[in-house]
Length: 346
Image (cartoon, rainbow, N blue to C red; front, side, top):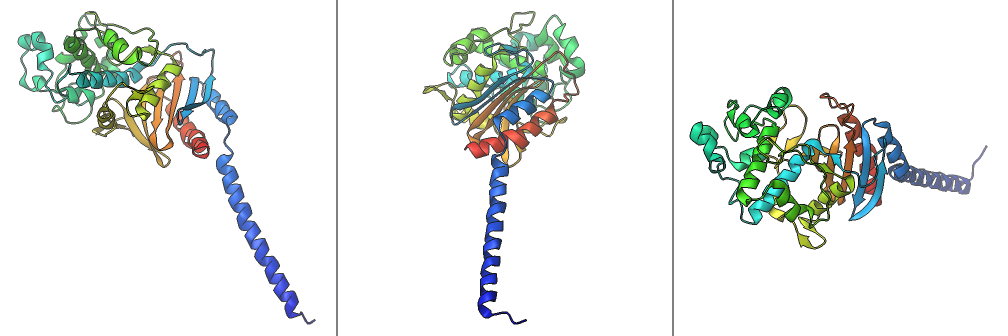
């Protein structure tokens, strides 16, 4: 059978069109896949993580989602646990900017004269405020196996400073709530105000944030780095303020330089694949660097500058364990659904 040249030409053209259509459909499928994540799916996935009590998503200053689970309601303060440490870091930055604290390179000795007069130690006296901010005091931890002994002690300051030096100050990280508590004491002594009063005046009132409960130590100092209560819709204001380089509704809250310094990496956790700044964690998720406050039980403020987004996620404390089994599902949700959704929205 003879086939005409015109038929071959027509057939070739058809094959070419089919090839182009195939490419177009493949691209369309790819685009559809990228856009396929919906808020409803994110809500369902979040609800399947047993510990989650709220999820808020904001991008470009606009709220995209606000979900509550397991009986939690909007505006309800929740214990943000060690995410409080990131708030303490902001308060130190505000105290520096307002001249109450001269520099983070200042040794802590002047703030604890009574202790060091009774317990002289040239190495401990050389610990700086920056060492406290980056969990590199060198002192043995008051968290984990020592936490119970610390919180039932008669004097949290003395207990923290009494810990043996396991490392040189400024060396490796030793995560410790006693270390962050010393920062609260320094804020109070430097400003002549309680840490709570200082926070209300310089951070919470200007941002219209309603602070809930906040524990105090036996001497009356507010706990530095744990047991502060904030509502999720107030937590997201903190993330947005940081995205806005320290401004909220046009008002300067904390300096841009402090945020830059806070988000740098100074050390790395011994227990998690996370880096640490001034009491703010960071790690890559997908192709994005994510900065976050993190508290026991799954209390998070996530900040993704390249997507101009902040995400708040809180968790129930009733069934929380030291295994922190919620971590992987939370970061999977962030990586597999929330970030793709934010990319498509942006």
